[in-house]
Image (tube, rainbow, N blue to C red):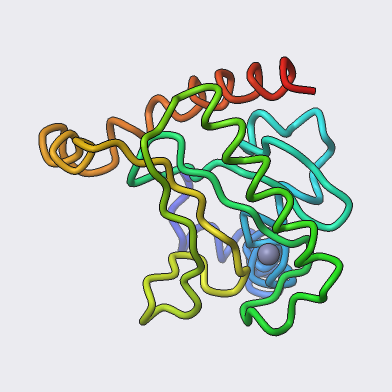
Length: 177
Ligand SMILES: [Zn+2]
């Protein structure tokens, strides 16, 4: 802003009343809309690639992790914004189970991992990065991937290529169905 605050206040005394309403827009949003999983679910399907949403079910989705610890790490999440495993209804849970298997099939076809970590982190103390929207991690593993990770360091390099990984998995998904 080029005007000095004092001059701004004198010229536009009503500004104090206006009080930057655009900032409230973010803070007043329901929690759901600040959650990247909810954001991806509620966005139009044409934004799926940008949001890394790989597959949509009736009650759950498969989505890529933007900052994966392992390349190709997927998450299966219910539509419902719930943070407790017990709050997921049985129908959604049943679909999540199917989507976990589908995620594994996609990863098998695209990346041929040697093993998997499949699981839920509920709560921050358990390691949940997004504690309010429960999700099942489907993490492909290779015998040497720990060394690989140590060598390249942290998640930054992986994160840069996550859109490329999305395209690769999406292509695999299309060939499968
Ligand atoms: Zn959510």
